[in-house]
Structure formats: C-alpha cells, structure tokens
Image 1: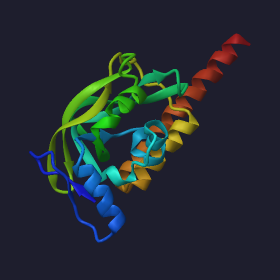
Image 2: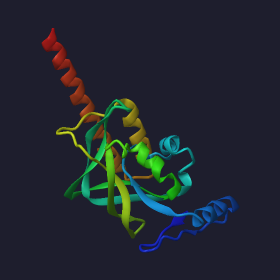
Image 3: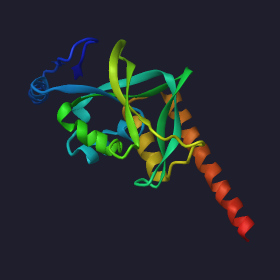
Image 4: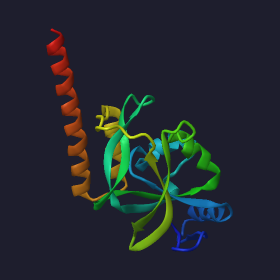
Length: 200
C-alpha cells in the first residue's frame, strides 16, 4: 500500500510481495498527485475504463472531506442523468476514496470530468484519511450548478454505490447515499407521471 506524508511528494511502499514492490518502485520513479473521489470514480473498475489502466494499486483508502455535502447538481449528457457534485457546507462532510495517481494520467482524468468543456473544475481540499491530514488534494466540483438536483439513472446509481461499498465507506453513509439517490429517482418518476397525466 502506498502512503504519502503531509508535506512530502515521495511514496513509501510496505509489502512483502515482489509484484507490489515493483509497482511501488515504478510509482516512486514518476510524479504523483493526490485525488479525492466521491462519485463514480470511487469504483476503481469504472475509473480504469476511463484511464486505461488498473487503478486498484493507487488507492490509499477511505477518506473524508469535511465542510462539504453531496448533491446531484449537474446533468451529464454522456451519462444521460444527474451526476454528483460537492457543495460547501460547514455542517456536513463527504466520504470518498483517496487515490495517489501518476501525473501522466492527469489529463485523462480531466477529460473524464469534462474539464476542457467546463463541466467540472479542480478544487484543492484537505482530506482526512487513516488518521492523517492530506493537504492540497485535487477533487472536482461542477462549474455551472443546476438550481435543483437531477436524479441519477440506474447505471450511475449502481456504479456509485458499488464504489462506496467496495472501498469500505461506513455502512451508515452507504445507506444514506442509497436513500438519497432512491428518493431523487422516485421524485423524478412522480414528476414524469404528473406531466403525462396533464398531457392526457
């Protein structure tokens, strides 16, 4: 497993596995950056789809972003549904996954988050993970936020929840996330039915 100190950009590897040591040496030899994922990127399988390589070895662990809350304040034309955003809120916190990624895939991550098209932008935040504070961690926030939340579709719902469960986020948080997404879907369905009734 890789760990990074608060003020250092070097990587230390603790493993008896030769394969893992090889990965760790490779990570030491290239620039890295810290990334906090709170949506579909929590799922390493889905992240691999975009970045073109296995990302499991880059996971540091479950992490917390304090002073923010989750919301579906962006509609993704690619995913055809509402997608997650984080909004400043002193009374809340967001659980997610802390990665240490190679700098060479930074552009690919930006492309996934539609940074060139002003979908999301970088936000640098403090992250709590494994009893350490990691400063200046990159995350992504929506540029043009919707006035009201837009429901996720079933595919996005499942990817986000799978990432949260697989990466070991707290059970209560996973249930709250499930209930929030389910409630938005039910509200969306009710709105569609109402519109249809009015048309009839």
